[in-house]
Image (cartoon, rainbow, N blue to C red):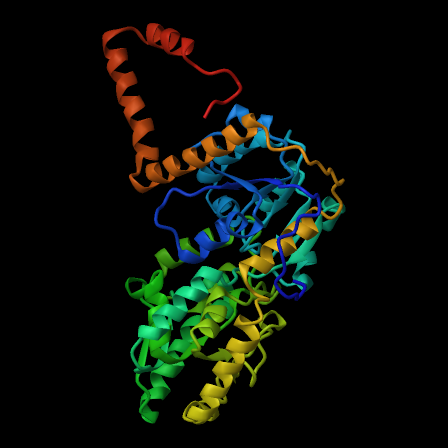
Length: 458
């Protein structure tokens, strides 16, 4: 992504744009990073942003009354492709949007997995621009570019800093205790389907748990899911830590159709004590390292925001974080662990690195959702014909916009209370009760009278 100072919201067309964001979410609350990503267009674009959760809604007929400039298929929509029985129903709903004359963009992540389904979606929905988190060097390995000759690709990060989050961290820091943890780390146990790169998450934890106590470092390192920290608890944890350890996110193994992970999981059920080498030999020989789908993760930026010094396994980090300048570098084979521990005992070096990282990564505003939204709008709509108008927003469009805002709120209530699964179940109970009294033919005939037309009404 091009580095640029924060600027006013993109508005090339001289009017408020109409942006439709499509997502799928049936759990509440969401992870803070996903929530920030989902609502960044509303918070930072200052345009009319319509949101539609296809897990609990269909595409309402009145959306066709709005002339949309941009339709966004976000990460929390495309992530559902990994489970066919989840993705097909929402994909069928989304097909009602194919006829809308708007620029369509997509934000896929984990592009190394279920790549074929992703490519089918991009082609069917005639996506104009893909904002990929994979390195540009890996795009030819992931995408059949002959199918996407007219599609623009841009590289973005998996997540950015939110203005509100930075402010909240500053408030938490003001009341935070002294940093009483020398080395803190949280991760989940990686699956073998992520390859040797994924294994580094666990290996770095083991290396520090083994070597740090000899230097009298106090550690709080865990790979247990029950120790996962959510929301502000994660920021509070980082504010207690002098150092945190980590590695780039991603995978070194392609799984284009999703069958590799299924094969590995089946193998592990039969061989629960199998080593990675045995799994590789029997499930994906020669595949590890054929793709380097590796990128900076949000936690690296969050550590900069909390002024927590990072010890990171050597990597590219999207060219944003530099070794010796923004973090202490640890070799991939951990051969310099003693040298790293020596450097970590220097308080002056820790403060120098954390202050520089905060100043160059956080204060510049380069890696915030505000800059991200401007970049996306500018690149997505660059080739779209300019339609300037000074006409005020119609009463009809305003009504739809505010109705959609209300509908969106109700959909989150449904998700929070699990009503999205209860209502279909209740309908089934009612139908079964009616059939027990009347004939199946009578019930079908009566219910058919109330069936909506092909225009799906929300």
